[in-house]
Image (tube, rainbow, N blue to C red; front, side, top):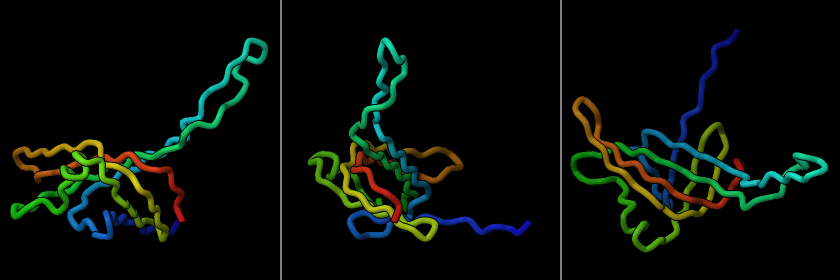
Length: 123
């Protein structure tokens, strides 16, 4: 059995690489709705409004935030998000809806932000 080498991921927001990115999570949902009928019981699914959410955790240098999501949250200005992993890329547009700054003893400072995005496939 051969040992594998596993992928890294790179996150790009509006054309800028997030070099302080420490974690990215992509959740894709079809939002299909379950269809039930009296005669059939579970009869199938009705297509829904597919979407994705993307969460990014960024380490925070003492000089400044690498990326400040606040101005995008207040104006709901769309952002372009690209993620590169496993020799493929995922590109979408979305809006940043939430952020969270955290710090604790013996831990790095962290800025997490969440974006609600158009569904996209890995290409």
